[in-house]
Length: 166
Image 1 (cartoon, helix red, strand yellow):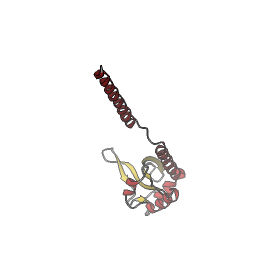
Image 2 (cartoon, helix red, strand yellow; image 1 turned 90 degrees about the vertical axis):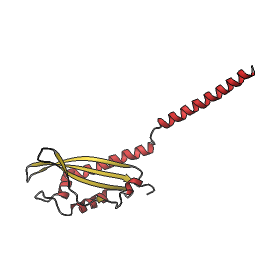
Image 3 (cartoon, helix red, strand yellow; image 1 turned 90 degrees about the horizontal axis):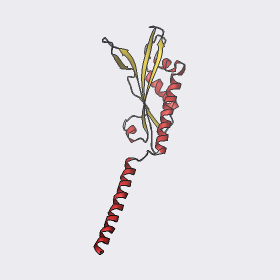
Image 4 (cartoon, one colour; image 1 turned 60 degrees about the vertical axis):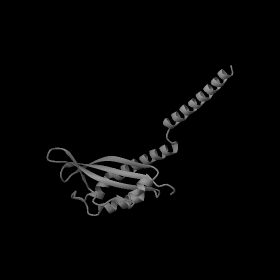
């Protein structure tokens, strides 16, 4: 009789440990993201899209990049960097690249990078690695070139990150 009681107690303890481990593993696998982080990431996306939308409104980006003959202006990267620095809060770092979508001889889409120098408020890319939230926005901007009577399609890649402790 005593042996059956000991076996039942060991069985109950083993079952309890097994249930606790299953709950712990399930919690780790099904853990929801931190709501504060998710909210911050969503706000960073909203901020980035809003900033790009206001930058492109009323042909603002056209006037920054192109001259009156629709040639690429010299030094436009510095002008865009000044505008971006005025729009971005101090705890947010950015890097923006702009590509012109063109067709090659075989009618394939080819992306030609317009900015020859980096447009960023950080020197080292490691700032993005060490940052808290880190997002990449792809923004497609179309405009009309009246000189060539053609549509210009620009792909804008904006990387934003919030710095920790700032």
